[in-house]
Image (cartoon, rainbow, N blue to C red; front, side):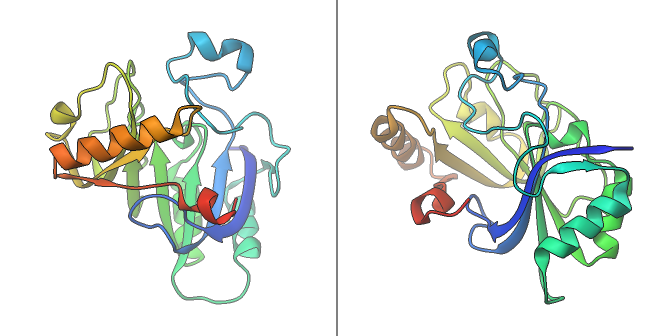
Length: 210
């Protein structure tokens, strides 16, 4: 299949349990919870997205004819060094495009494959690290994985109910919005009230990385 990639670049993973690791960040174009167009935001299921995932015109983006071509692109972005290769696959919604052929091709090149998904599509087999970030109003069918990252606050979503899902780590991330201080305070309050959760921040934004 042809893969549509918005952007791809070498960076440090900025969120969650894998935060601080050197990684190739691979963002697929397209999402099933929002078109990505501002005129559609108010009627979207996910209205707070802070990401541009429309098109293939970002840094390192493009269309790739097959899994081998995209895996070669990821290798080129990683550069030298064979150890602890990590690719973080996101979107948009990566499960719209990520398939076993690409997972296998990345594994063949020595990469661990980490994925962040909204959980509305079952995860592709073979993923090494799965992060699910549920959105209020969506039907989450992938209720197991390595980490669950809940952007907070979100009306209409119950952290207590989510605690019953099968994840090793439960993370709260303050929403990146106009009311950042209030969102941070709400996230801290939730962790203090429910100690199963841990606070995570978007460290890449704090230190000025992509």
